[in-house]
Image (tube, rainbow, N blue to C red):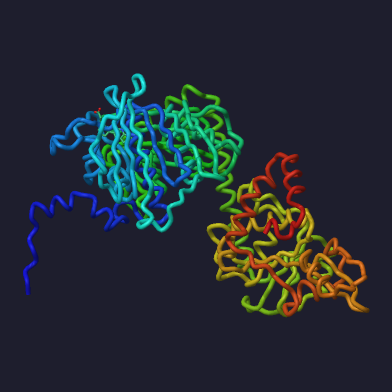
Length: 639
Ligand code: 0RA
């Protein structure tokens, strides 16, 4: 056996080159899929943003070229062009582009605060590109150099002329290597979303994006002089703010800094976003921890000081205070530790105390200086607290009711006789005449009918406590018998098919959307388990001889006409379930051997949910237009 060869100096040199990057791209950019491809852009842009953070760069241009390349131009100081200490025959720029981990601001003052997964250095981009063109304006001169096939210089850095008057900056154009990446076509939306986020996080920095690819042409500019204050306003744009003013405060301390912007809206959801060095920390971490703790503390202290909370009152919970809060927490620190499943959790303990102290001090000041807004925050939190307590009582009540088997069932439920959930179905039917037909059409052993009246409560706009006071919701919760919200237990569901039976018109589609939104928000596991369905009553009928034929939709009618070219009879459009007699309803919609059910997937339910803000917002005009626009085939559009 030959011994392992020992490492020699030349091997080490090889290791410092770019070969390891091409051997294991995933180690440097996460993957070679689309996400990795875009990492190349983030890496270059991060370097430019770094320049901006240190006060040297005010504008970045990102361009997708028609030939598949990507160009990033900034007006920073420009990568140094002087001979490099480690190898005087080479320029510093060449070292930055060809040596691993040499991408940092060597010898620079100020702290380096760029990212987590990226911040690996611009040489990684070079290593994974078929070609890279570099142009540097510095010291009054334009310098240029190119690389090919994974970072091999085509020649040294050369002065090619004068820089435009007084300009400094760097231009990097690269073409991703298609032997490395699964796909080399950039996605404009992925890029603009991130550039916009970066522009929000770096106040005043102008980031332009241009897509020059044929068929994709577009141009956008992001520049926010309000920074994360603008970010919060942007996030609240489609909502109704509780008040216009944004609470903003910041603190710089040694080598760390924190910036926080807050604005409450009238919804019941919390929307807190945190960032470390411009990177989204979607799993939270120390900065969020410090913030939440201090926010709860400060608002309670303020409420007590103003006697909004009396001595005997219990404290507002963090959840109460954060109801309807849209907030951005942005921290910058020297060595961010990204932890967690997706490396989206900030682990640096020192940042927790900075954020906590800053919020304790500065938010308290802000509340004192803005008493009207402060009072609105406290009042909203008090409402949330009351609602939370009422919800708990109401939930206990429904739980107790359904525990008393039978007595817990709603009066208007026409239950099936089977007690085996696996074969039991419940039809939720809107309208009393449709419900009457359904009752006659059902298989009493397996099929239950729950009539509901009119539009059930808009669950998007109501807190759980109010929702549970609604008779239709109560009936639904009791009939299904598996609890609600956090208490929901899908294994207790009394039916394994929950079938929404509503008309094929605008009102029917609205009711379907409301029900799906309710299930999604309050009984999500029901949808995840595939227990929720929409019945599909036919849209047309026609006569063939003496017997009636039902046709599901327009395409079914078209197919029928193709098969029966001599058909002379009219087609009846079935307007409502109420117009069908029980036999028709049974044969077309309910009989398990003949009907066609649409199983609701999570995706369909979420789609219904995202349209529901439009459908159920306060703006009647918008809602009316939306429904009209989408009314062509309502049965399929909203589910
Ligand atoms: C190393 C040192 C300095 C700047 C840069 C790199 C730099 C890199 C990139 C990449 C894209 N744009 C960039 N801008 C600057 C500091 C230079 C100095 O001290 O003058």
